[in-house]
Length: 223
Image (cartoon, rainbow, N blue to C red; front, side, top):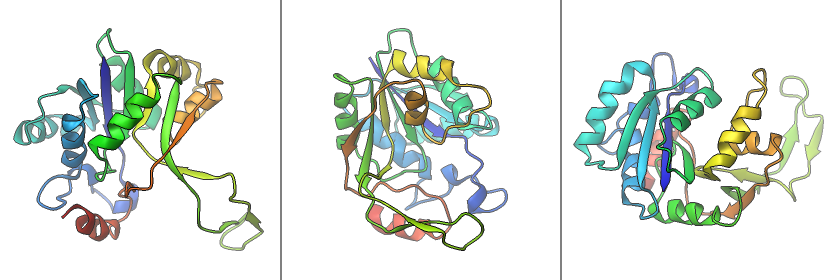
């Protein structure tokens, strides 16, 4: 069985004080509803676990009901760090879960086709992430905004979500993670545990809502 864990418990610090970006209105529906609907339509997904702030659990269940999310298995409270929220999601998965997809709820452009492609990718490898080669020139600034050097980009990829894992591989990766280490995505936890990660090329729009200016572009893409 395949379970999708959708993360929407972040602090949204770059959106402004007191803003929960997962529940902002985007083309007449909450941001997180776009991801819920995509996973609902994905043939490869059997269940969905939604991870939100503790004070948004009731509202999240109402959103799922409003948009007919029949695959929703559980809504659980996340933690202050990504790994704590993922751990809460993993703990809510049923024992028969073999594949798990972890997705940022702030990526509303995700499609059922990408979700199914990622689920298929981990039939042969333990971990996979969608991504695209970095095309921008990259600069390293050791202090402030003063450039110290240009970073070679020929082997660099910008990764996205949903990231896909064989369930036990992700559980093992997070169990081995040092309590002092903070990861910015789940593949990083796999890498630190020595688990190989495959990149699946994805050139379709799938960027993450981070700042208020992103709302305008997302609205155009999702109309």
